Every structure is written in C-alpha cells, then in structure tokens.
Image (cartoon, rainbow, N blue to C red):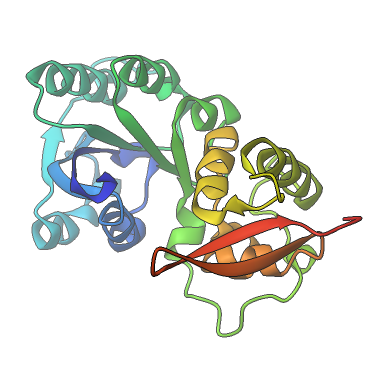
Amino acid sequence: MENDKRIAVLIDADNVSDKYIKAILDEISNHGTPTYKRIYGDWTKPQLASWKSVLLANSITPIQQYSYTTGKNATDAALIIDAMDILYSGNVEAFCIVSSDSDFTRLAARLRESGMLVIGMGEKKTPTAFISACEIFKYLEVLAAPPPEKEEQQIGSVKPVKEGMASREQIIKALKVIITESSDDDGWAYLGQVGKVLNKRYPDFDTRNYGFSKLTPFIKSLKQFKMESREINGNKHQYVTVKAGG
C-alpha cells in the first residue's frame, strides 16, 4: 500500500521557510512513513536560526554544509550525495525533496529511474522542470493554507496557484480523454483510477489548488461530468463519466 512506504524526506533549508514544516510532515503522512528526516544548510548563517526549535520539535536532523565558495551551492551537492547514498542503502521506497530549486531536477529523474516514488514540494515559484521530474508535486502555499470554510461551487471561481499550472479547460479535456480510455462499455470509469491517471499526467494536480478538499466534490463541480454510486458484490464503488453532450 502507498501509505506503507518508507520515505526519505530531504529539505533544502536555503529554499524553504520553517513556517511550512507542519504542512510538509502532515502531507508526507498521507503517503507513508518518514524514515529519514534531514535538512541541509549552512547553520552558521543567522537567517537559518529560526529553524532550530522547529527541528527539535519534529526530530529533523540538520546537516551542516559550509558555503566554501561564493556563487556555488554546496547545500544542493550535499543533499544530492545523501540521496544517492540512501537510494543504494535500499531502506526506502520513496523520496520527498522539499525545495523550490530546479537544481534537483536531475536527481528526481534519477531516483524515479530506480523505481522510487518521488514527491516534490516547493513554493509556486518552483520551475516547471523540477515539477515535471517528480511523480507527485505539492505547492507549499496550498498545503499550509487553512481548509476552506465552504468549498467552491465552480472551479472557475478559484485562480490557479501558479502561472503555467493546468487550467480548468486543460483538466476537463484530460478527464474526458482518461474516462474514454478507462471506461466500460456503458461509459463509466472508476473515480479512483481516473484520479491516479490524472496525477500521472499532471504531477502538480491537487484538488486543493482549485478550492476543493477531495476529488469527488471537484468532479461534481464540473458540469461536463456526472457521478453515480454502484454496488458490486456488496461493496459500493463510485464511478464518473462524461455527461451526454458534455
């Protein structure tokens, strides 16, 4: 099961604020157990001082990396070396790389080549190349935001979190294609399967980006689709399909 995966959580302190740490760890718990929790930076720098209490409270191991040369990011190199050491140890099934830096694009791709689940987390300024290299990508601003008191009724009422993120029209088009490809003879497809395929095609897709906490209300808000619950062998399964003429 996905939530049984052992995850190596590697955080780039130079590119992530300590205010996101609870949101990061809460989201990781949805995917598995953080076996490694390491954060990289030059801890002699005063701008990282705010991390101290956060690290103690969440049992995160700080890795000291001095900035030997101006203009060279030694922190990135240390994180990449550790990631490869952990990969070859065989102790995890997934990695979570927390950074808004495109320097980790090749690392994410290499880890996936070795069969690892790679979860990326970063701010909306994160370059598209790094987002695409991850299997799953989460925006820190969305994770840290309080849940909406009332979920949006129309997807169009919420602006995309990031410029270049999939528009509602792109998502609708992708959903139609996925449902057609995975539906039965009557045009119905498993909602869970549709969601999995959508995430593979758009690594940063998250219903929270559009003001919805779950996939079901998100789909219900789109007029092009209808949902139906069916009972198979005593168990209820939810299906989704495109409305006739949608």
